[in-house]
Structures are given as structure tokens and as C-alpha cells.
Image (tube, helix red, strand yellow):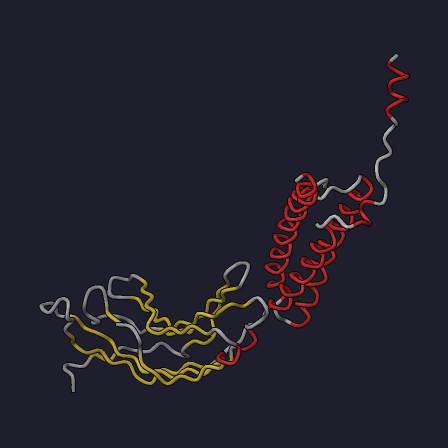
Length: 177
Length: 88
């Protein structure tokens, strides 16, 4: 502490330790917030069509097209330590080999509390394909709206906001009408 | 030249150093606690870090320059003639 340089050194060293403790306290404060909001998810239709991908034009690929309605109020999830909310709509089904598949067909990033009221009547954003290229023999799928809460400091937390009330069958169409 | 280098060195006496040490420790911890509580109450991380930043700037202005209040107890050196008497 005898010179300016040593005072700056001393103060900045203790300052960085205090900052780390402050950030740790902010991360721990996230555990106080235990909001678990629930919403509604309705699947309007699921249709499977034979499709041709641009990349593999010779392959007979079947693709599912899902129309859904989501309504959820996720504002309780926004606290001071929430940076953003990653929402995703996931389809879970068992294929004819008995393997559980989980496919994300729609997602959204919510950065502000004002945008956290979700009312979406949409269709799948991403291709919904089966690894074996056919949806025959695939059992009915369960659709869930899940979220991933990303804090400014701390642990990532996951949750489920809505789920389809009953498993939804795949309707296989012969050709695009 | 030596006056310039003394200005950059910014010496303070031992009482001043102890005072600076106490002030900086207390203010750093108290500012962290207060800015956490105020930010939590207002649910805004911006408030927390803005308040903490303001406290740090004020602390730096108080503690880092060699103010005269830190030099109010200069070291009392023994006079030269007494030393010569002792060695002889």
C-alpha cells in the first residue's frame, strides 16, 4: 500500500474476489425462483406425405407435416437472472423397431418478458423425417412444449410447459393433394 | 525530475496504509452486499452492477491518490547526530 501501483494492485485483487462472490450469489439466487408455468398444446393435424429432398432426389423419403396450436404464459420464468428462454416443440414416438425417437420440430428464442406470452398457430419449422424413411408401423407420437431457461450466471434449467393430451397418430397420405 | 517521480509513486505513511487497507476491505464487501440486495429487490442485474461500479469508482477516488489525510503521521526518524554518538 506504499505506492499508487501497490494500492491499485491490492484493491483490484480484492475487487475481483468480491465480484466472483457476487456472481456466485446471483447464480444461487436463481434457486429461489421455482415457477412452473403450464400452457395448452393442441395438434390440429399430422399428415405424412411422400417427399423428395433436393439433396437426395433418388431416395423415397416420407415427411410428416404437423399443424399445431400453442398457448402458454411463460412470464413467471423471467427473473433478474434470466437471459433468454429457449422453447422447443418435441415429438416423441417409438418406431417399428421399438426405438424411442425425439424430434424437435419447432423452436423459438424468447429474450424479453413481454414476448413470453406465446400464442402460436403454426406448422413445423424443421423437417420431420424418419430415419428409416418410412412412417409405416410407427406408433402414435406425443408432442410436448419444453423450455430451457438460460441464466445470466448459473445453471441451465429445463422444464415442460405443455403436452398433447393424447398420443397423435400419423396419417399417411398416398400423394400430395 | 525527482518531484515528478515522487508524484507518480504516491507514498503514504504507515497509519495511512492501514487506514487505506481497512477502508478498501469494508467498502468492497459492503458495496457487494448492498448492490446485491438492491438489485434483487428491483429484479434488475443492471441496477446491481451499476451500483457496484459507482461504489468502486468512489472507492478508487478515495483510496488510490495519496491524499494528505494519509500522510498525517509521518515516520519520526532519529536525528543523525544521535546515531554518530552511538557508533562512537
